[in-house]
View 1 (cartoon, helix red, strand yellow):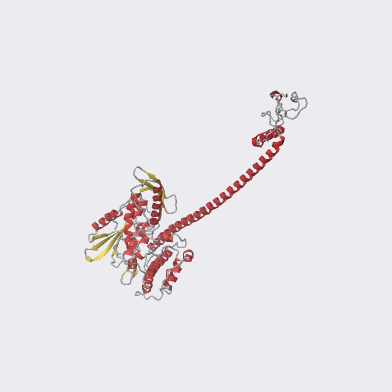
View 2: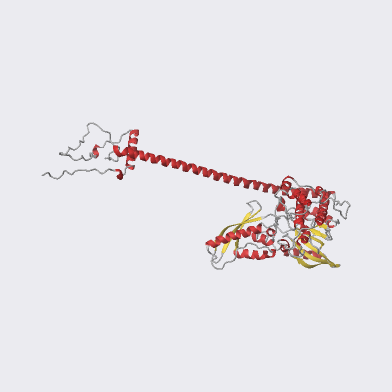
Length: 575
């Protein structure tokens, strides 16, 4: 049954798990407030970036929406007086950048709708709750036995998935959960094959899979009904919270979170592995294993949302396993996610980052051994064990299960082939994303190294230039001193500055003045008429050398170096 004919025109399938980074590039002052220009980038490609403009009041509204998480976020305080000062604006900009970093780097806050809408309003402006209500209303008009009890607001992390608590009028004491979900970017099955796969999963009854009572798919979304578990998920058990509360309130900062006892770790882990093995052996791919997708009821773990793989929605741990190129199949993704579940069951919280090489003290050495085989640096780079190998480890091999028979799911040959092709396409997209991420890392490292080499070369070049400049200045000082020494006793004041000093010639028309009567005074310097100055020499070498010597003598002339001469005045008459 299809309750929606066509998807919205121009619909873009976004991967909501791709991280957004935000950098405040500048600020601008208007008449009464300041606006901050933020550059936002999706993923590692700088081409996929845009700008948004936000005021401080916008940050304040965002912070109020995130207060439910119970985390103290570093939002700079308000200031009523002096909030337009340049120094204050620069300081506030740095504080707002720290605030953005703390949000975009948090695994739960970064995927919330309020943060996505704050940074990317163009792609997250739709009212998904209203869209879900429209689809649910259309479904209820076609099947009158169902009735909505209440919406379950934000009990899950997915932006494009909404939950409603419903009941069957024929069984009013039983509660069910209806979920509406938008199809994701990894939906590679045709509509016909998708309907066949959902029909198979709807009628499936196995001890380690949560039953799916009803499913309906269209070209753009799916509607699902399954029993509602009042006991909650495995994460609800670990965090000791109520399943109907908002996920940000439940999981961001749980106050009573605590790891499980060894017997429950062994039992739950083995049941989860058995469910994964059944899916892998049948050809169904999952890739969405985490503690919120595991229902615990009477010491029995059941995998939830197994249909997510064929619906093409992205995994919550996708940003983590895309970092490692060895995790490139759906089976290895499930093993990687199981390592996260095992860590959370042992320590009461998910790992802060992967790989994990240092483990807090825990009394269960067998648990640490399995964790090291999955989450260590060596395992993430070289390869992890398979599900069958994990079942054979000492931690899980001796667990007694209630269901000892071999579990299997029989698939029609056509559907099995279609699932195989879709699985290959999903893994190909993952490997391409990992390749681009690896290439970006190499380019970043190369650019960093190149920049450091360039700076080192620049410093060397500047040092060489400074050394040569110092040497030239020393040579000029020596030349000046030599010129001063050579011109102080041998040179005489020039008489014709426009021409070089003429060489001594015989037959000159100018004669020296006659000596005065004794005792004669010192003769005045010889004066030459302008007409007696010989023309410049035509020889370029002689003229160039004489001109250079003359210019050097003029430049090096210093009045302070002249010696005072003692003279006797004989101009008075002698009596």
